[in-house]
Image 1 (cartoon, rainbow over the protein chains, first blue to last red):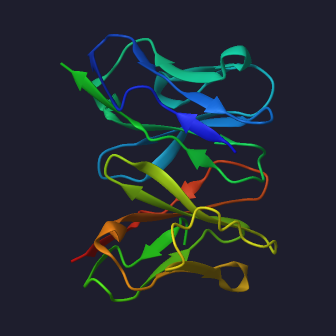
Image 2 (cartoon, chains in turn orange, red; image 1 turned 90 degrees about the vertical axis):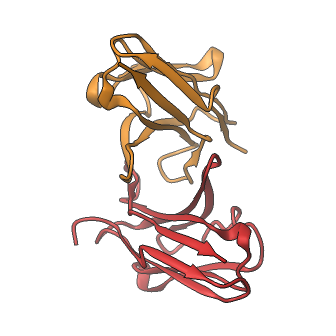
Length: 113
Length: 113
């Protein structure tokens, strides 16, 4: 069965500092991987996704993530945090584009001015 | 409509009562999901409908929970004999088969008193 773990239920960074949100997955096959973001009082939206091909994936708002098969990881990064990045971030995995999507527990990001 | 629509947006019910939550997916989306989001628990997968295939019910927490999807479109999630631990935000999402991202509705906030 697939599963997702996100290290750190809450992460705080200073404005302008590097953002690193960790995600590790377990899957019996090469997975599809996603990061979704939920801004306060808003619905979830896709930040970026990995399906096949290039392992470094760029998403919206300056975020990117790298698929590392050897580490079963898909960590999310952004070089410089902005106040507007404060939100809940969810990593998700699917065996294929037709299979169910399983989400991790989420990481709440706070940005300190 | 342009997005996934869920109704009601809020529901307060007494313990032991049955509730029905409705989801109208985006037209043409063949896959439909129900998730439950509880404080600090992330998104818990409940059930997945994919076209005419048998639904994946592996996430339903008990036999008090059931869901159906009529005509490959509208879905109803039913919770019988509600308990206080059922209090959560219930999210519906749809997607075009073979493509991401998931398009989420705004959810139904269920409060069981």
